[in-house]
Amino acid sequence: MQTIACTVEEVVLGVDTHLKTHTAVLVDLLGRQVDAETFATTKRGNEALILWAQRRGTVKRAGVEGTGSYGVALARRLSLEGIRVFEVTRPKRKRARHRGKNDLRDALAAAASVLADGHELAAPKSRDGIVEAIRVLRIARASAVKSRTQTILQLRNLILTAPEDLREALRDVSAKQLVAHCARWHRRDPHGALQATRQALRSLARRHQVLDAEIAELDADILRLTRQAAPRLLAQPGIGPETAARLLIVAGDNPGRLRSDAALAALCGVQSVAHVREIGCRLDDAFGEEEPDGELEIVAGRSHRHTHGCAVQPDFQRFLCHHVIELAAPCARVPLDNRCRQQRMVHRARAR
Image (cartoon, rainbow, N blue to C red):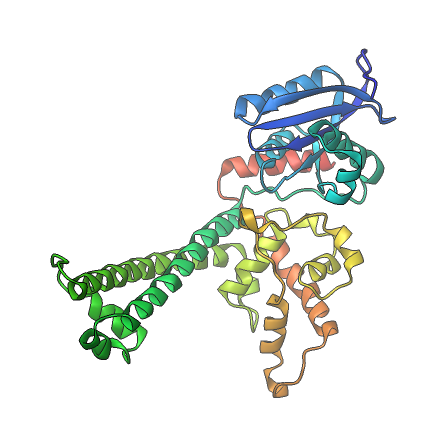
């Protein structure tokens, strides 16, 4: 595509994000490429990218890929500069295979998406407040719970193959008693199979206790933050700290990006696929996001326990979405520090 040499009045920024570098492209309002450059993903590189773009025209809108992963720092920096950021979905691999794939083409596609479908794209999660704190703590908790499960399974498996006397003594013991019993053993030099097995069981049992304490500590922190972020949501029947935290993470620190209760319903699997466009965000498990599918079904089931096992209708789950988004959205804006308040002020000034 031909590059325009002169400086234009308004340009649209498109960015293809990666781990080490960001590829940025500027296009004018007719979609013609103005300039393109590659920048490092460091703080200095993000500042250089913004300065480079502002020298070539007035930047009011930017389409960024991966705003929940590689592009999160750049998206925050652009928002602080008063530039409206849109989350752009990565191109489908099938189409890219036919056209050929490169970073410049992906960045151009991001800018073109803003020009063509700007009113249908959504703002990314701000990831700067109390909901982000809950999310990162839940990532650590999920890892600890997984490790604890693996530890108790390894304990059981070692007992199955242990020497006969040790196996007979421990095979019918409950998990809690097994951990407490093995953790009390003293360390001895493993000069045989029996001593080595006892040493392995002791190590695993003590690891299980450490993970138990870690999970309890994280649970207390998550509960405190969830109560601070959404006390009204927690007060509802059928919604506990676990469910409330997951629903808050879906909404994010800027729940205004969910334009309606139908958008939340689509994320929770109780609405038509067409409403997903109202959300404009993708949940990426690799970076700690959680799929909310099933949460509304659990809440609806608890609310309908007087029906003695009757199936919960999707219409009732959609009604719950309308109720939940009203309770969660205002509370999710609680900031963690003064910097978050400043970022909110920039966002509101840009909206006006």
